[in-house]
Image 1 (cartoon, rainbow, N blue to C red):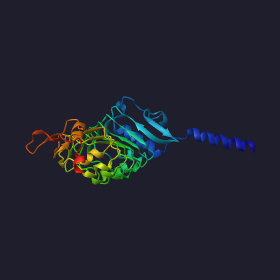
Image 2 (image 1 turned 180 degrees about the horizontal axis):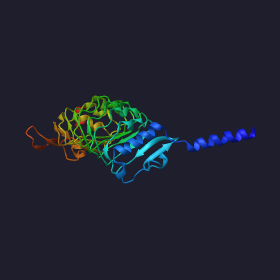
Image 3 (image 1 turned 180 degrees about the vertical axis):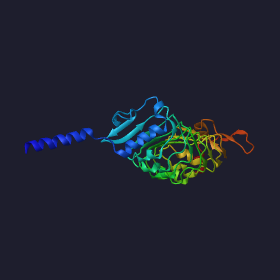
Image 4 (image 1 turned 45 degrees about the horizontal axis):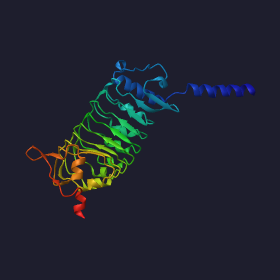
Length: 284
């Protein structure tokens, strides 16, 4: 009986030592390696070695929870299998040469908190399924070639703190759902092809610290409600087609002092209410 107990204990210990990531997760990583020219990465993987030893891969309880391959010379397209890394909390592929589209099934990564594919050559639209990743806290997709409109229900991401999509080719209006994102601290949508107005509901973004919309095609009156954002420290909404009077406070907060493009394509500075620091005061 004693021998049987010792043998059982040995098998349990052995199995825990030999345990590794699931077949589907390892396959997803290998697919990524092959699809992005892994043999020419700066930091390569030994596919025959344990996954735990692979550069940029972090495991918890034999599950892949983090993949950080930033600035690692990935060249190629993302395989759809990357969406099988269902335990992933962090995906950072910043500053590589990844082209093609973001897989439409990206919403399968339900545990994801950090999503950074910035500074690549991605094209196509931001998949609608991204709004299903309820735990997302940061989306950074700037400096790509993304087009199409923002997902209508992106405001479903109630935990999101950073939405950084500047220097793409995104068109259309800012979805109304965005104005309900109470946790949002950074909203960088500059250098796109956005149109439409900035809603008075921008005042609902009470946590916002940095707002950048410059170099788009937005129009209409600049909302006085911007002054209600007490946490706002940085703002640049210039080089749009906004109009109307602005207060001293808003003009000084804007990096380019409210320089707009008029209907003739000429840069003009919006008139400032010199007699009041706040446009809100004049409304009372």
